[in-house]
Length: 508
Image (cartoon, rainbow, N blue to C red; front, side, top):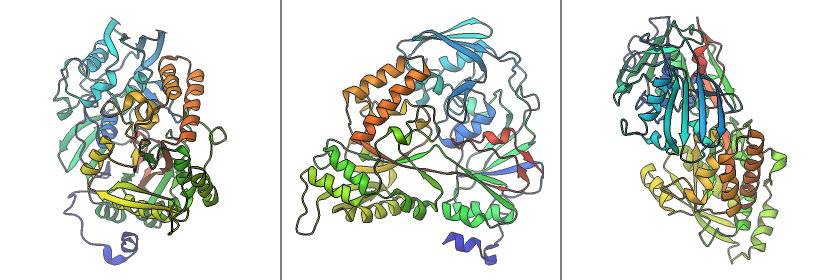
């Protein structure tokens, strides 16, 4: 296994040909990423690397805090005179990297270009509820809505949206010009992205002069680069075994904290075998999360009760939700109540779990299979390459699957997308075809409510219903792990896994 290899001196093979020149310039931070960003223009880039690297080049209107509440950024304040109107007041004195002043016309263009065909972007759907955008004065933008949409503000936040100059077109990502803390220098596909410090950044210039985001798709190579000092930092690239091994390296540090990514299991609630909620509750009782976390994640994860991240302003607390502690006897009782008696082999329930061929997912599936067997549940595993697997689940051709939500679960609108009746594919991610009129009504009310306290009550009730009816089971949140050289200090973790710590970190 890799963690054994890393502990052996014989693994010190020559790596200079992989990333020639690393370590020669002490003022450059060498940051390992697993793939090239598909588009650094945040209006268009949808992959994690685009959003994380692009989030250093561009600024958003608002930023998420540690509780995922939205705070002022390029917009210093905003108000909603009614449910269909947003008024944003912009920060003065902000300049783009080419020296041009940023103002309301730029913000309006950034949004309109995602709506009017200037760009063909998957992110355009995030603004589908917008009717028109009015520039009231040089620092005021008014957004008029066709229908109320509380998710609008989240969709204008860091990593998801970036303000570009008025007139920026579909090729903006090739030579991005933003207002962020770092300026674009160059990009070579499948090799690297280079940025440099914006000395005139309105929020205070970073201390790191230059960053080389070097692409290393192989995790073994990435770990070895860190071990030999030719790579300075990685964020959530390595496996738990690799992170564990690198904790012992004297010149490296591992910073670990709560992450927002959630791994979950989902059911096809219309399947005859799984239609009764007592059956789904029995499956939840038969699962023992902590041993799975310990074995598969080396303890580097936290058990989940909801899709929202730990500490989220709208997340229901443990005391507010029905709980399913590991209890095989309770699982058996629930199956009995559902009329599922043991056959000659002691099996009460048979169903199939679909997974991708990802190794960690397959190991998880096999572990779940063993745990369910104790309650008289026979689980068959069917693995397929990701494209086939994903096609099946969007068509509803599954009984149960395991996947993860990345980023989208940082906003409570995830419940509408994942469980509202209107969100059956292709209109949303309700792949299990769950439908509950009360959930739909609560989500509709939360979409128009302007009071965050009232919205939280509505979302807590949604989570309570989902925890009772269990169309899906939240499993756990993998930790946010950053491995870095000692010469990089001041690493402050963001639960969302962004690279925002580079704004204030220091390089010796």
